[in-house]
Length: 348
Image (cartoon, rainbow, N blue to C red):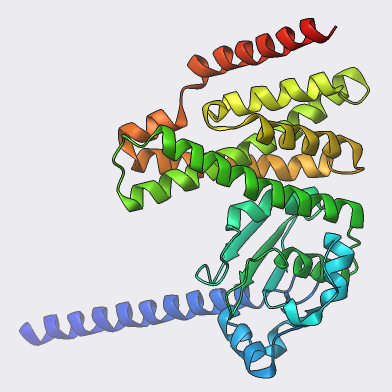
């Protein structure tokens, strides 16, 4: 009786082992199949290397991306590309160090950016790339940025545009140059906001880690503001059938800053920069079209999740940082309108 029981147990264990091995095998096969799926719009992902990299640095960069040369299409971004797409620079190949890997995604996936070497990208965050990329017409792509030397990171945009054009997708030079202006403006205004916020919040006694989270939240709120401005400009144009006036643009910018609780921390000079940028959005073909707005919807969802996460981690200060839309938006919008009306009465 005991022998029969042991045999049954052995057989049961053997069956379980076979099933487990089979399931693991199927899982590995499925994972491998998923990894080797090639997007038919492009083929392989495209890596664009900076022209200043030597052979050793190129190999090191590919290693950072975790790819072999045979697994990707390789292009090189040079100084002439920088001038073409960004509208500035000397054309010197020796300044191009940052590199990107671009994977085309299915429609509706949106724009995602990951910085593999944040210690070497000293100026631009992953989120700060996203709005300008959509402004330039980039859609449904996963973009990975890496550099084996310390760089500011602006030229990474050039690599993305080079990747798209290498795969037969034209990038508007006007939109690309406006995207660079947007990136520069975002960087400048966010730095100003963070500086002003630190002065106003100097009694909060935040730890270094919490201060870094707060700074990231302010940057993300500015990115949310830009998404809101673009969406509202497009909505107004659809309703009126014409471009917004400067007064309309000023109100849209003011309302967006109030909505994301930045009014207390922004200078008039920075507001003027955003108004100027907003006017160029509606004057540049394609920036506010249906396809771009679809990408912005996905981007807005991403930014909202980031701010929610950061403010939750910051506790009571996070609630103060995020603000309450219902409490603040009406007050600051009315204040903004009162200021405009005051100066309008003076000069008219």
